[in-house]
Amino acid sequence: MGSKLLIVDDDELLNNSLNAVLTRSGYEVVSVLKGEEAYQQIVDFQPDVVLLDLYLGSMTGLDILQKLRTENNDTPVILITAFSDVNSAVRAIKLGAEDFVLKPLDLEQLEILINKTLNHKNLERRYELLKDEMQQKFGPYAIVGKSEILRKVVHTAERLAHADTTVLIVGESGSGKELIARLVHEKSDRADGPFISINCGAIPKDLAESELFGYEKGAFTGAMDKMRQGKFELANRGTILLDEIGELSHETQVKLLRVLETKRFYRLGGSKEISVDVRIIAATNKNLKTAVEKGTFREDLFYRLNVAQLHVPSLRDRVEDIALLANTFLDEFNKKFGKSIRGFTPDAIKVMEKYSWPGNVRELKNAIERIALLETDTVVKPEHLGFLSYHPGFNSTKMLDDKNVVSVPSQGIKMDQIMREAILQTLALTDGNQIQAAKILGLTRSRLRYRMQQLKIKYEPKKDSSEGSRG
Image (tube, rainbow, N blue to C red):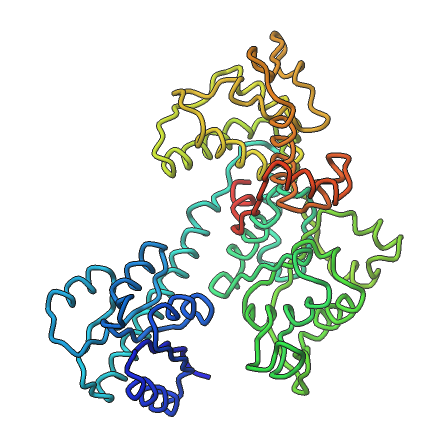
């Protein structure tokens, strides 16, 4: 199907006519008669363009447009009216309408306007992708760190970049494995091609094959409408990062091994063999040798992936980088939240350097974001870092060499507050994984979920990959 159009017009005859004409032109069309139905269709159908009548009765086209823009929904809207109302036209454009057309409609002119709107939307999309790519190369993906151990990893990654061979990156969660993978890609001859990252642990095992290799129309329930390319096809002439590769099922491991050896595969439900030119980088926070011994990971796949290995150090192994990273994140969040926190006291630096950072760079970034958001002081002090003591295994009485800093304030603190903070911090460390969080907290998953409901905790993990962006 072509681009998706939503028609909102209370004139049933015009509505049906537009639907028929635009459907014949190759668009995927949904039409509604009432303004009250329009907003829900915009949310559910996610049209590429909305043709919106100005006068709909109790809820006008301007009301709908204003509601969309208030909620940061930037779906392109072409407003339609039977009246030459200049004031409404000006207001609609100010609210973000793409254009304004009058009834009776010139259908040829309308299609030209729709194509113009779609082209503009595609250009905006390309610009955002280009901006993201440039930001990845020169902005948040800059490697921050001066430690010798990190410099050695970077040097090795740059040398491996030109070899165009499979690379296995190992390291703890949040340590920056994706950053190193991006560095390998950007320093390679494939730098102009796409970099596609997929977290193998974040997709259901029964959907892994379709995510990696795509599927044909009708391959399974839910795939009735269209063919979909998988991540390998999208990464053609570029690099694909298979993060947390140890989470793949045996069946998917077999198919991945074949792709490694032949650079060929079939889409799910397909009969045509697809060829791709892709460099594969794998990453894991597990010991794959141990997984091989336990029989949960194929030995032949492990050796095929482990042609060259890079080990990304944990943050506690590069203590000299902590202050530099913390200040870099503080600058970032000062700008984001309009703050002017100048830096950290020497004692605050000591607190951070003595903390083990089990969540590595990701946890450090979350901690600095929290401080920048909540604190009002002009400098970060040890007491602003008291929440770190809630993590199991961290002894707050040993945060400093010469001071006994206790995180409990003199006025006291409620146990529910401590439990709430412990759960939030643990969810941040596990990137929202409730099973891992429950293990860290010594709870069953059901008990953790009960506590979250009781304390009204709603945690949504971040979707960006910026935790690896700082080192």
